Length: 160
Image (cartoon, rainbow, N blue to C red; front, side):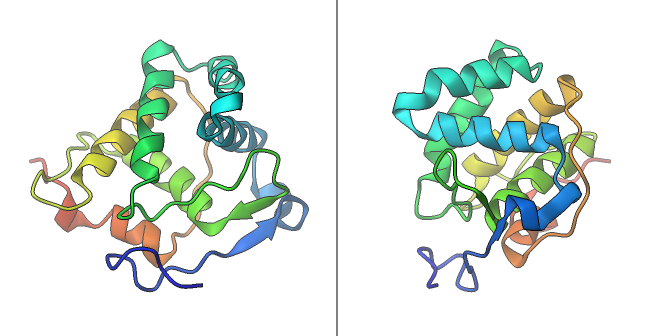
C-alpha cells in the first residue's frame, strides 16, 4: 500500500489477526488498543475514556490520549488505527504500543521542537507518562521502520 506521507515512503499497512498473534499480545495491551480505537470513533469516545479509566489512567492520562488522536489523523503521522472491533492489529498500532513503552523508560523524553514530528512526539511522551503512572504492562517487541523513525534519536533532546 502506498504511503500517505512523504516522510514515511516505506510505510506498509500490515495487519495480523488477534488470534494469529497469540499470547504475544497481553490483555492490557488489547484493552489499551481497544480504548484508543474507541476514542478514534466519536460515537464511542465515552466508552474509550471509560476503558482507559478502567486501565488505571487518571483524567490527565485520558486527556493525553484524546490529544494524541488528532495528531494521528494528520498526513505526517505514521500510525493508523483500525476501526473499533476490528479483529486485526495493524503493524503501526504495535509500533504505537512499543513507542509508548520505550518512551516511558526514558528518564526525560523531550522532542526537538524543530522536527516535523515534534507535536506527535510530545504527545506520545505525555501518553507514555500516563501509561507508566498507571503501571500498564506493555511488552517489548521490535519496531518497524515507521516506529524506528518515531524514536529516532535525532528527533529527541539528549539529556546529560
